[in-house]
Image 1 (cartoon, rainbow, N blue to C red):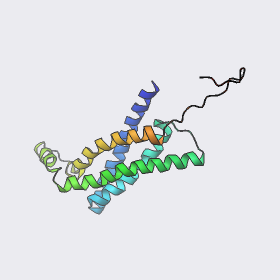
Image 2: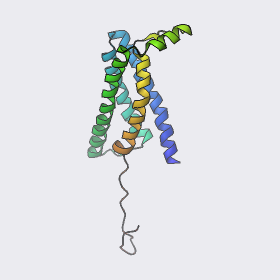
Image 3: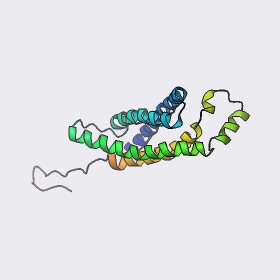
Image 4: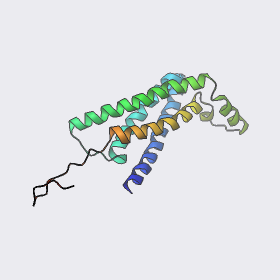
Length: 163
């Protein structure tokens, strides 16, 4: 049951992290007009939000010890850095290769009037996000917030370690 709760919480906060990423991407793209810089800045916003929510509510890492925090933050940043590089490279590359064009045509055909449907690189960003979310869960579960092996305690009555 705990594993189901963890996955549900990861999905909930993953959706919220994605909204932070896409929302800030749209804002930054309107401000800077650059797919690269908008994507980089939105990634920074999303990773900051994701660390806090993953630590506190998804993987419920309660440790406040400096050593543990440094380990968690450094491995979280390293793993998100890896998937971030994938996103930062792939989104502009796919956009440059015209990956978004069929989606722009579909949005026009469906008469979708909101500017968001015509934001340069948005469909590339959505597509790459699916792959990145899966990788991020695997890294967080197996590396960053990995539960340490439960230490076996000696039985108080016998003095022997219980199995």
